[in-house]
Image (cartoon, rainbow, N blue to C red; front, side, top):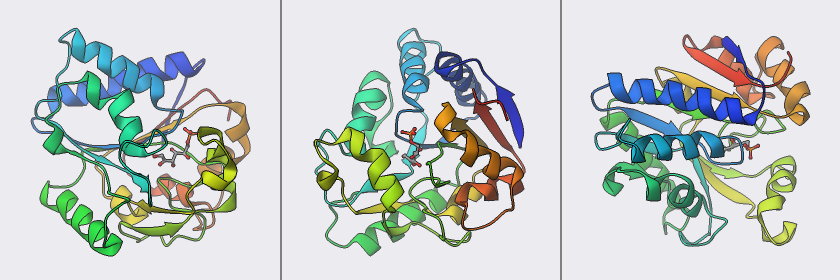
Length: 237
Ligand code: F6R
């Protein structure tokens, strides 16, 4: 894993946007996997600015989001549909038909996962997957214990994740307990991984991810085996 040390979240947002922008310019029809959460917010703000200045375009880009909660309406401010609309899609020139976010309201959730997986396959796989890191080592919503060869699936969220994400909801009781997530096997097939980790509270888990044993108990540790993964972080490792 290549490691790029940055000073703070502003620099992380700038450097990450530079890397994504350069792929958008060099790949003809880029397929990009997107993450939500606090970490990529500045990356998306920079991409929106670059797109509005005409430096980059998403017209030929297809996106696939990592995950979505089960049971939240798309216009619910805590859903990842809403997050993506707010932070990225409403500010860029992407063709909405090419912006794929798992539907947590689908009647048949298993089918939704199968269809999503097939869409990625048919698009020719991901050129790049953007990832954040959960406090328990999760990537997407692949919680500790998820098989490394998993494909898009339904998950029961870990208590650590529910507590960490409660900050986005009125009360912890409002945090959904289930979600849909791209699998670890799917993520690992991306040609490139851009792994963003920010803030001292993630220092211990990040050291385990980068230097510890590769184990399903620390899902992100599998990234040690990815041939083209770049970690951007403000944490001293
Ligand atoms: C979100 C996702 C999660 C987050 C992780 C870190 O789509 O896949 O794995 O990347 O929980 O979240 P933040 O950035 O809010 O600390």
